[in-house]
Image (cartoon, rainbow, N blue to C red):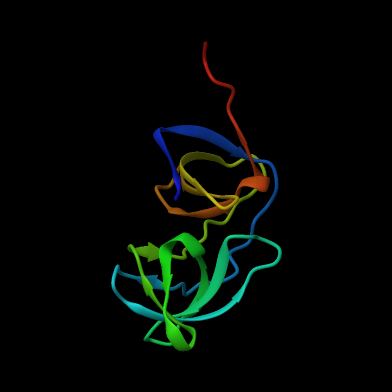
Length: 124
């Protein structure tokens, strides 16, 4: 599952990230989704379409595959991404399949690629 970072650690954007899906999937545990292909660029993510017809990537760990291309969500999930500009300061809460769940200085939260973030050195 996800690596929860508690307490959250500070990070800084090293590359720009543009939100790809402005109207993301937002599903609850027990909801049914239709599965598409697995992401080749970001292993561990599968294309999902919810009952409202919204589609985006979801972590494979969060879906329980059923028959006929369907699946049931194992837990709540929102596919919201967080836009980044180089130098943005963020807090990192969770790491999953090469992506962080992060919060920016404005209090906005979403997924960002770990490849676009550096973590602050730990205090010793």
